[in-house]
Image 1 (tube, helix red, strand yellow):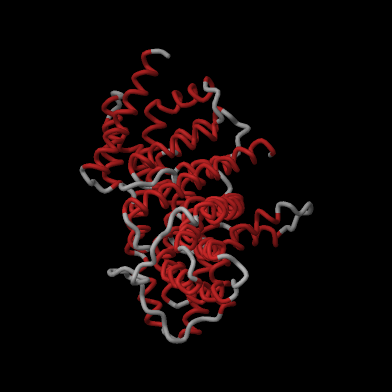
Image 2: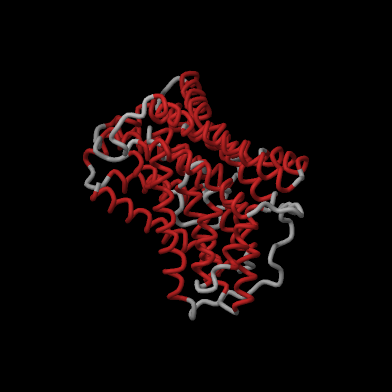
Length: 448
C-alpha cells in the first residue's frame, strides 16, 4: 500500500476511535459524536472544513429527504397499535391458540409478528409481561420465552424496514425497499427461529432464569389501552398493511405482462412513503372508530414522535459521516481493499457494521456508518446484490451487544435478570442471531 492509502486508513482509525470514546466514555449523543468525528477526519486528511461540513449536510439532507417521513409514520403506527390495545389483542390471540406449541415457539412467533410493526423497546414493553405470564402458567423455564421474544423483536428491528437502520441502508445503497422488506421478513423469521427456540432449547436444563415478582419493571411508559380494544382482524390489518403495500410492486414485477396505468398506480401506492401514509390513515380510522377514544389516540400520535427525533438525528448524522468518508478519498481505498481481499464483500460489510456496533453499542449508528464502505464494496463487486448487502449490514449491527447498548439493559430489566445472566443470554443470542443471518445471506448469494 502507498503512503496515501496508509494516511487514509490511519486517519479513519483515529476518527473511529474518537467516535468510540465520545459515545462510550464521554457520553456524547451519537449524532454529535458523528459530526465531530467527520470534522476530525477532514482535518487528518487535510480537507477543507467548510467542504467537509457541506458534505455532511448533503449526506444528512439526502437521507432525511427519503426516510424521515417513513420513520416518523412507522413510529406513529406502532404507537397507535400499542396504545389502542391492538398489539395486546394479537399477543393474547397467540397465547390462547398456542397450546400445542412450546413456550419458546409461541413467543418467537409473537416477537416476529409484533416486531414487524413496532420498535424493539415498544415490543418488549408489550411482550415481556406475556412471556413471564405464560412461563408461570406452564411452569416452564423463563429462558425459552425470553429468548423467543428477544430473538423475534431483535431480528425484525435489525433487518426489516420501516425500522430505521435497514431503511437507511437500503436508501444509501440504492436497494429496492420492497425487496429488502421481502428478504428481511423471511430471513428475520428464520434466523430468529434458529437463534431463539432452536438454539436455546439445548440449554433449558443448564440455565434457569427465575421468574421475577413483577411482570413489568417500574418506570415503564406503557399506556393503558382503551376499554374497547380493536378486533383481531383489525389489529392484524393495521400491522400487516405496510408490509403488503410496500412489497406489492415487487410482486407485480413477476407478472410477464404490462399493467399500464394500473401498474403505475400500484407502483405509486407501493412507494414506501405513500404506503406508510395510507397505512397510517387506515390505522387512525379503524382503531379510533373501534376504541371510541379519538383524543387518546391523537395524544398517542403526538407522543410517538418524541423518541423519533433522536433516531432521525442519529440516522441523518450517520449518513453525513458516510458522505464525508466518500468525499475525502476513503471510497477509493475501500474499493482497493475490496479488490485485493479474498473475503466476500458481504462478509466485509458485516465486519464494518459489527466493529461499529461493538464499539458504540448502537445498531442504528453501526448500519448507517457502515453504509459508505459497503457502497464502495458494491461498486468494486457489481455482481453483489445491494439487498443482500443491507441484510449483511443489518446482521453486523446486531452482533455482540454488551453494556454500552441500551438493549442489553432493557432485556435485563424487563426479564429481571442479573448482569451475568444477561451476558449469558442476550449477548449470546444477539451474536448467534448475527452469525445465522450472515450464513443465510452468504448462502443466498451463492444460489442467486
